[in-house]
Amino acid sequence: MNQTTTSPVPAKLGATSRSNAWLIEPAVIFCGFALFVCYVTWRALYDWQYIEWGPYLSPFFSPKLIFPGWQWSPAILLLWEPAAFRATCYYFRKAYYRALFLDPPACAVGHLGGHKYTGENRFPLILQNVHRYFLYLALTVLALLWVDAFVACSYRGHIRIGVGTVVLTVNCLLLSFYTCGCHALRHLVGGRLKCFSCSTAAHGQFKIWQCVTRLNERHALWAWTSLGTVAFADFYVRMLAAGVWTDISLLQL
Amino acid sequence: MREAILKVFRGTPVEAGKFITYKVPVEEGMVVLDAIHYIQGYLDPELSVRWNCKAAKCGSCSAEVNGDPSLMCKTRMDQFAEGEEITIEPIKTFPLIKDLVTDVSFNYEVNKQIPPFCPADDATWIFKQEDIDRVQEFRKCIECFLCQDVCHVLRDHERKDAFWGPRFFVRSAGVEMHPLDCGNRIPLLEEQGGLGFCNITKCCTEVCPEEIHITDNAIIALKERVVDEYHDPLAALLRRVFKGK
Image 1 (tube, each protein chain N blue to C red):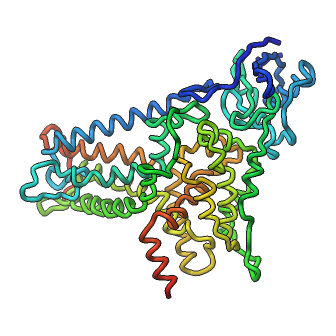
Image 2: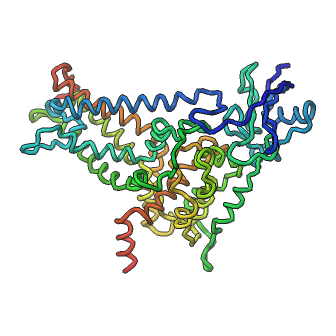
């Protein structure tokens, strides 16, 4: 028997008895956020002249808003909505409360203290509760992106499927998985009910709730993959518009 | 025979805590609780530990093994590398009684505040499986209080005065989503239970030995019900319109 005098771990930032690599997850998420925010800022504010090529419209600039006299990037008018939807998303809340706010950085790891914790009870975090309103807008934006993907199937009066069509469609698909797996949507379509079998309407809602639940189980996966595809779809269109890449035609009728 | 090195927290509220290192022979299929029992039996009979079933069903032997809130009876010794020091501490959120035993009575006091299941007098006691699936998941809880231990609102911010903790949101969701229940605990959860303090960091879900989806299926579902009643003007308007009819 050996004896060392040590008291249980105090609650200061990073203090923990955990011996595994707990830092990797918040570090990777931090880098993911940083990379995405830098790219979006660059595209939305400094590189916004390349927004479309042929039938392809970048998802960052959809719907295409052109107003006489508006001299700034149209992304300013558009990107606040998906940003607000993701910022209030229950998955992303977990991700940034851990990776950015360090409250806590990981489970059973000391948090960034020195503040009066009020959770989501006070301004500004009480605004997380309006997530469902951003969901309504996100569903509208999603419908418009599907229209863009449909438009991308034809070029100069002919049906044409290019690599860009595939990129935009995959992006829409993953955004649909993410948006339709939203926790607020899961509640609204049926989760709020106490009884699923008490009426025909409730049973119908139960079936929809089941579908949303299936998507919701992988919400984090859809959140990150859709974030990646939306950035890549924009980058692809940008590279075509800048004349750096050439779109390969897969099918032309 | 392979030997494991266990650093076990020893102490009481009145004396400074310390870690004592023990060497324990490891047998096939052994769990951390077996190693603790070996210490009690052969090395240090004064070591205190709370346990009961040794089958991950009673929820008594909660501790922090290498800093991870876990059930000692469910943590296998063969997952540790040879020569690795295994640190065993009491759960941090609750007051220490002795060694690995803590006073979890806070939880029983909170439990008393939740209005119990209240079916209507004329309830038909037949319901479909699809109506009870959600509730059955919550009924798997073994009250090990690992979720309470790891929740940073209780653990780091020490808001036991204003926050019930994940275990009691699970229990509330279990009655709130029961198809025969007529109660409404949402105002209580918001005003007394401190549901708004939860910031969805999901540690409760990560440590649950019963793999209950505490955050997704209980806490977020309750938070959305709070939004219905407190933060959604459109829902309030629809409620007023349809109540009037």
